[in-house]
Length: 173
Image 1 (tube, rainbow, N blue to C red):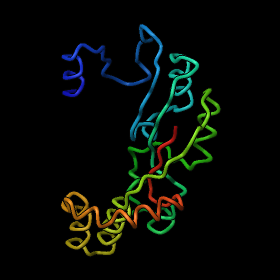
Image 2: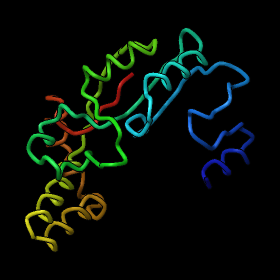
Image 3: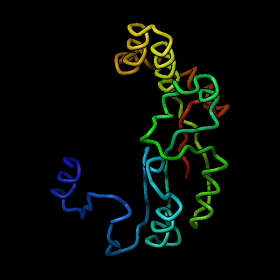
């Protein structure tokens, strides 16, 4: 809510509410960006179709979602960080996201697998907690936020995993 108020102060029109209740914009969108949003929608096909109808023919849609084809889901099961039930209503693979986008009038231009291992570390922490190692698991969950500049030492691992589509998050244009 505070972010919406700050944007309004800058003179931009803001609707703060669900996409299902959003009014049609005064003019078509040129770009739509949704970071970690679409897995929370009750009807992503309808919502993406609504956004398509509100867009110019050349509008770019850029969305980032958890990648359910990541091996982390298989490795960690219920401890997978991005499972996040009941908040995540849908889990997408590149193929299923392509199907949803196609059904709503969009097409995939490119898929970028984010170069991060934060999800891997947090999933491992969740697994440790589920096995009874609460203190160790909790420290792993907090680790990504505590690394500071040391996180750059982990970038080569994230880069390699991203080349194989195994970092837990994907951004689709």
